[in-house]
Length: 495
Image (cartoon, rainbow, N blue to C red):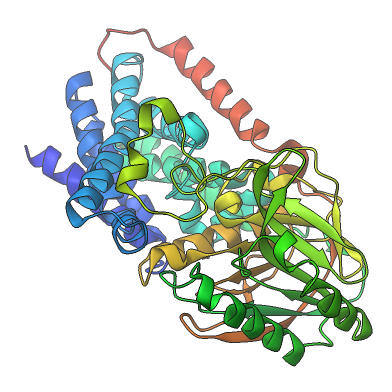
């Protein structure tokens, strides 16, 4: 029972390693406690303790789902609690599966191998599965906790999952060092120093280089209340507010509006708003990126889009949609959800994976909308040709919770992985500009109508992660499992 309680506490500890708290070391400590709980457990106990850990991790870490469902999704308090609890209960199955798999399939061999190799590798494998299974939700990946530590140096090579693996291996090594004796302990300590040294060394490598002179970028943050955003009577005032903010920042080579900043279809404002705005932008040497819904009359499809206006018009259509927010998966089975939630424009179509590159401020750019930037592999679309990254989102859905800060941290990791600056415009925050090393060049205060300007340097070149994506770390996981399998057989106790 003490180990069960330890697992719950370890799970509650992990979200404190993420933004806005930012205690990255707690990620290592949290996994250390979980590995101790798993160390001598039978498969059933390992599953149970992993599940308790997951309830703590997600019950705290994604508690903001209640705000999205109740405050802005139209669900009653009871329905919002129920749906949030169901999601937490489902996500907790992932760490539970890690414990069961590691303690049932590979129980023989050295306990050191389990702590240092098997537990970390299985943990990261389940993180990867969580990133795509049932459309994927790669939120609270352990690797994101290390954006401000030397372990971030692994990200341009192995991506966020590689950072997760290094973090989990450090946790296993520290536990192993506690129980080991003699030369084995010295060997374990050498492993810890090797990971830290390798990370610090990689963190000093400049994988990309400037592709041209820096240019000024303006990021707009409208702070439009979510409960009034789509009211027809507020539409004109919203558009005029963004136009006025834009005019205040002409001269910046790029001006970026948030996701669906215009609460109307592009076709509805194409004649009345676009020509004048585009002419002004050209006159002042600026390009505009505007979040706006788009209706394709030919296919009668709706898209969540970014329109680029100025010297060269273009569009980007969102490819990875939010289930239950932008579309309803398994509509015949889950159609009742439409009666529980009241989310506007919840029937978008996904954009093509083969969209033409968009150019703005004189360079090709890789654009993501909303939570597309939490999918590391998918965010590589357009790279290495793109000179910088842009993300537009509407994190007003999360209210004043920990979610916008978690999302900002994930955007920072995308910049690190790609070795590119990221321009990020949101409705309520966190808006800002991120340098290629993940540091913040400028951040707008949250929940204020404002705009900030900062300098972006276009970059060229490719990090190893840009070239190979998650395949490098997946190959490493495969090698680990094959090596462990040679020293372990199911059903025999660990030594």
